[in-house]
Image (cartoon, helix red, strand yellow):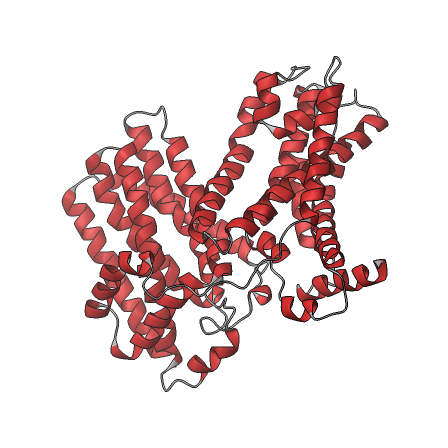
Length: 484
């Protein structure tokens, strides 16, 4: 039995392209984040508060990939029909899937937990540090099981709801990591949790062994939850084949006016084929949606949080900063343009009697109309609600055109092939991207400050919009002339 389970487990890892490799980059990232955050707060916290903080960081780090395509890969069987034809029992298939989840989750969570144990306060002895790692692994299993079940239940039945939940959770994790350090000092010497904290904040429950007093019941509850999570992985149903979506979905109706507007006044005749293909098909690619849509929750959450409690110029400044710096999210969006589960049909574009420049330009315009326009429409609503009406109205068109120009100039750096042409597991984020994102972040921050400070008249705003439109038209002409 166990030999067959081991074969199935190796096959699952091989299907992800990771049968003989260790995710060194991900482990290093998790360890680096944990080292920085735990090193900052270690001297200000009691053993219990430090344990709760470290467990929260570890569970947040493992939740981020599980909220995206990593969780979907753990649920979805690429060769489900082939596996079911093998002479193996259903329980063996379920064991292999559960071990796949456990191996992936425990490997990634261990990197941050070991670092957190090394940075623990001096009052925690070696046994306490080992116990911190074990409690963190139990929490990681519990969180992973909940998120994998979320993917399994809603992935094919209610994908729109799943994306909404992922966006909310993703934004919450990022905000918790960024602003949580600000509130640590207020709980620095807390020696034991309250009942409300235990049920509202799972790391507080799994940190119970480090609290002063008798909290054996809470420790037992934490391990009971972990055991239940393990059992739930064994009964996790296999993800079925994604049901084909209706050609007339709610999103196609919602975006129909944008599509008609672009086709009438912006998209050229030789660009129309790639525009319509990307406009319709890319939003139906599950991996593209899971990898890109939840990231929208980050700027929206920061905009809502940052402007809260601020008044006057400070409120407008925060809104301006988020309107412009949101464009740093666009390279992540562009990197997924080549993603498709139907990538073997790339011959449609490879053999099209159309220049590569027209294919790229049509795909670029489809991304702008399908994703960038709705994103800035949503940002505009929040900016209008948070800032003054005039301040928002004069900056929103400028921020949108800046985002389009950023997209135009980083397209060829991020999109390395024709649209919808690569399998999702073959899409990689290159290390050079950190320099690109950092540079974009700095430049767009400067642009945001300059726009907020100097674009204070209607005629100035109109002049800047005209200049940006001219730059976009010139960039498009240059793009079509060079890219053949």
